[in-house]
Amino acid sequence: MKRTITLLMATVWMGCATLFAANQNIKELGESKYLIEVGDLSMVVNAATGGKILSFKYKDQEIISQLNRPEQFGSTFWTSPQKEWNWPPVQEYDKRPYKAELKDDKLVLTSEVSSRLGFRIGKEFTVDAKRKAIVVTYSIKNESNQTKKVAPWEITRVANEGQIFFDAPLEGITPAGLMTFEKKDGAVWYQTDETNANRKINADGKGWLAYTNGSLMLVKKFKDLDISQPAPEEAEIQVYVNRGKTYIELESQGAYTTLEPGQSLVWPVKWFLLPCDGMAAKKMVKKVKKLK
Image (cartoon, rainbow, N blue to C red; front, side, top):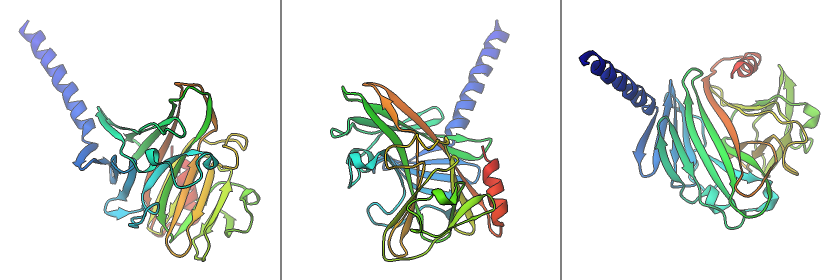
């Protein structure tokens, strides 16, 4: 009997230790902010300001825009197509507080329902310890009493300095000539530049989007779409360059989906951040394509 109790206590202790270790990846910082860590990566999320990702670092090196201006910093999430709400972004999704819950090894954020659109947004943050990545799983739930169509849309702002690259046909980047892309080493590349105009392109990618500032490489992996799946007038990959030397948006979208009342869609995006100082373009593309 004594041996049975001892074994039971050991099992319980091991289970608690495993849970404790898992929870060490996600910590509450106070003021509705949360820190997510895996390996040399750290991400800070603020539930109080639209559930935005405020920071994504490799060791002490930041990759996300830190501009202190509305709509020019961090990483956010909207519903697509944009023509359903135009501008500014929907407050319930982009600026208002999200409910935050720590569940075992997950941080779960839940938005209010937009009275205008009838959707509720969810954001679930977990770590992939094996691959040293952070997984953000977005959900959109139809809380209305009508059948609706919608697509998920992630928007991440970075400094206007460096290169953006992804796998797509050069001739399929539209509008043509708005930004200068070069096809090389298995990807199309855009070297950031400066103009007095806002610019945005659409492209049919291959399920990934990357940006390098010369020392770090940010890579997003998501489900590849065929050209018929994005929302009307939208695309799997979009790049927005703000006027001047300010910021750039790395944008990716999921499939345009029909949701009956009460139904949800789920769309995971895996975030990687890697050192790449001195790495050749060909090696960067090869490394990106190997990431899972």
